[in-house]
Image 1: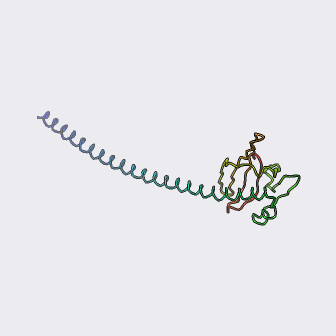
Image 2: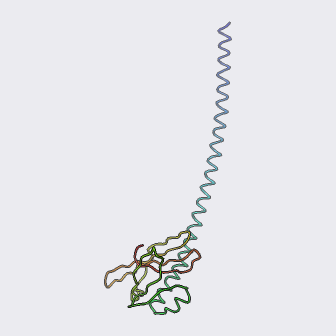
Image 3: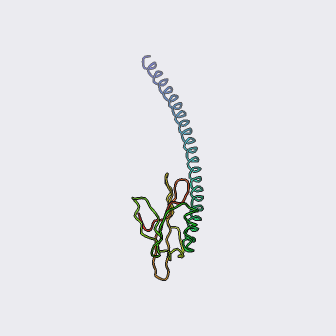
Length: 167
């Protein structure tokens, strides 16, 4: 009799354990589904933010590239007063070079004015919280030389200066 009671007790215990296991699995499965849905939503938000950033950089690039190429055209045409007036920047022209006033921590050489007519290809776009830089390679096919120049804009998109080479 004791063995029968003990057997029935173990059967009931096994059934209860099995039932609670099913409830835990169902709860765990529901938690996993919720977590997956939350991760999908977060992933979609990140994709949207990335797409917005891509379009923002595209706008930056178009605006700054247009301004940079206009400045180079004005340098080539030696319209220095127009550059000073239109872009509110400070520079000197000496011995066929234009030297823009740069911050103390930026070392730049003079830019040979004759290079302003060279073809420009975009090297980089560096958007920071306080400024934006757009770098160009100027390629002289006759001399097989390549120059790196960088146009710097403030956080509002106003042209500041050009520096030559790497900082």
